Length: 259
Ligand code: SF4
Ligand code: F3S
Ligand code: FES
Image (cartoon, rainbow, N blue to C red; front, side, top):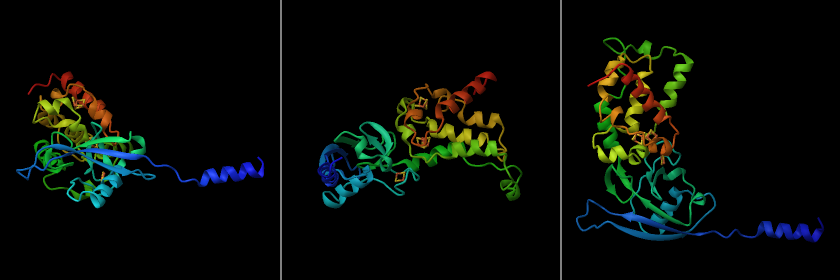
């Protein structure tokens, strides 16, 4: 390369990168305000390098509209609080880079859950209710929790299986994307079925297979699932949801389970 060519290449390297102008169409509605009417509101901003939807929404809130409601806690795909419909797909906003989206972006709250306002929904309330119905916690063996047993060494292969299902962050994306959940108010969703599967393989849990089937062996559980697979597609943690559900259903059918 000649000196002139090298210089030209350096000049090209140093040239500022032209950023896109992003247009956000956001569903606005505040159910707490009796005068509020659902509507789409549009905001524009200049894209920045490495911009996530978390950064973009913060910029809109800081510079354009402090009334905009949305949830973020960890910004790292861990807390599960930032699930929303991004161009119609339930996803974590904090893990979504704007560079992977078109310049026109539509945001709406996750359906199915109680709306707090704009993009903020109360997934926690629904998750608590689901967990109480399924008793989605460890039922330790013995009359009193045996702390020594809880700390007992677990077979590494089993521990891996438990850990795999334990990665659920309760973001609600699987429920928001599920057709059955739209039709059956009490459907426990892939998140609930995953919770049961998690304790079912945990050797510290004292419940029998029949105990688990009792809580999920009906149309609000495993038999309500119509294998639509959206849960599997949208889960940001890539949990093997459809596989787990199909496995539990096969087990129940094999023993002729009826509730
Ligand atoms: Fe979210 Fe996946 Fe858990 Fe569903 S199973 S709540 S999509 S992490
Ligand atoms: Fe819903 Fe997933 Fe079943 S999307 S219908 S829970 S496979
Ligand atoms: Fe915690 Fe997105 S802010 S998962």
